[in-house]
Image (tube, rainbow over all chains, first blue to last red; front, side, top):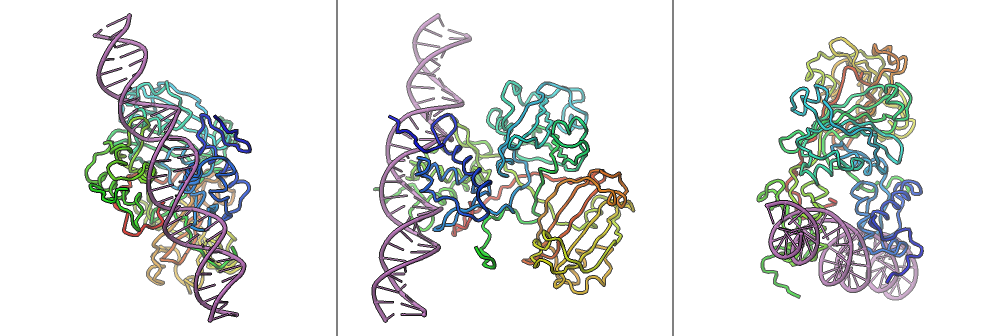
Amino acid sequence: MQPPPQGAGVVAGPVPKHAQLRAILVRTITTDLAPDAPIPSERELVEAYCVSRMTVREAIGQLVNEGLLYRVHGKGTFVAPAAVQSQLHLASFSADMRRRGHEPSSRVLAADLRTPPPAVARALALPPGAPAVHVERLRLADGVPMAHEVTYYPDHLVPGLLEHDLSGSTYELLAVRYGLAPTAGEQTLTAESATRPLAALLGTATGAPLLLFARTTRAGDAVVEHTTSRYRADRYSVRMSLDRTTDGVPAPPEPRSST
Amino acid sequence: MQPPPQGAGVVAGPVPKHAQLRAILVRTITTDLAPDAPIPSERELVEAYCVSRMTVREAIGQLVNEGLLYRVHGKGTFVAPAAVQSQLHLASFSADMRRRGHEPSSRVLAADLRTPPPAVARALALPPGAPAVHVERLRLADGVPMAHEVTYYPDHLVPGLLEHDLSGSTYELLAVRYGLAPTAGEQTLTAESATRPLAALLGTATGAPLLLFARTTRAGDAVVEHTTSRYRADRYSVRMSLDRTTDGVPAPPEPRSST
DNA sequence: GGTCCGTACTGGTACGGTCCAGCTGGCGAG
DNA sequence: CTCGCCAGCTGGACCGTACCAGTACGGACC
């Protein structure tokens, strides 16, 4: 028994409906709507896409707590001003990109066992010369190169990692398959100019400025990875607050300008 | 229905049930359970507290995306060892350099009244076209150029600032002379290539990578300054730890705008 | 005119149910 | 003994419904 989903772009399938709806909303938000513009009401979305209200609320809920939307009880749901955006990221690349309203994807450039550079070996607490799992990826946002990433894992912590699909979120993989949910990390951040091969990979000019992250991630006492990422500075910036945490979407209505 | 929820601390009332359950879970998690220990299954919680599964999922969902819990499909929900967060401090150039073991100094390149760029005016909450105190400085560490800094102050907040010696710590000046001790700030960080004049000033090659900071500083509610700094990436890097949050005990009697 | 209140929206909370998908462990077949 | 399968757990994804609580607006009443 299947009532035909007539006008809806949302269908049952391997992709959850709320994810489909979410994608639709992101597209609408980022292309058609101005900040503080209302999106259709939950009940309208229910009708328009032939889904339940719960599904709608799930999709909207995700976007709300990623900071793309904000809800006002009794009034509606609105596009959050772009001002508030990123946080610091120990979040995975995937989560970070989604938070910024981009669709993350990855291209695995290499995945093998390799001896890490001495500095990395030291960070991972491995004896010099010992091999480690080495993964090199090109990270894309909306299909456009965003960053280049080289990660090393101590191989005894992640047996069989190379057999998994590494084009998704590795943090998720670590947490789910190996019980290694990142608990702490440390990173240093500086800038660098793109070398010719890197520029080619990232689609920038040679010498273009890159943000260079060197991060060590821990799960409990164990160091689970060391990552070196190079982000295109023209596409990426880090935002940090220098005191109080928490984002701050619910901007109190300043009635100085017309709504 | 069953009004007497014998073993349950969850009752109808002004505080939503999911918030009550959430508070209960937080307490359990932080006092009774070890990291990676499983919490009761959703269906068990449904029974134990006489609420619907949706309520349970709402409560757990909040804690999951605050990083206190993580779910594993088919296994259960577990106490997260920690979460991700980070904070940097607000430090003056002088303090920052001294902490790094360098001797800070400054060369004032300009100090006048000037109309800030629109973006800066907006950050300072000034009407477009209004003048602001403008200070441009070359910052040195151990006598060697480290950064170039352009700062704007709303002139009504810092009358007479231009008559002071600006080659020292301005944060100190602000605090001592004007009672404007910085309490909070926000900055975005990206990278840039050095233009020819900037390169000459900083003593680097043209096109050398620079770390570009755009910082807004507040003292209480007032925005006291906006600074754009360009640091030589070969001499400067930012280190940040991505530590645990463990914000512990939220859920005051009043359900604030949290999620 | 101004106040008051009902109505018709909005999101918020909460209930019930159903089926799917991933994991685990035990038990029987080989 | 090992292997494979399946029952029985888990969370995941949905559906439908109901009522509450803010918000806006217009029309009835002073």
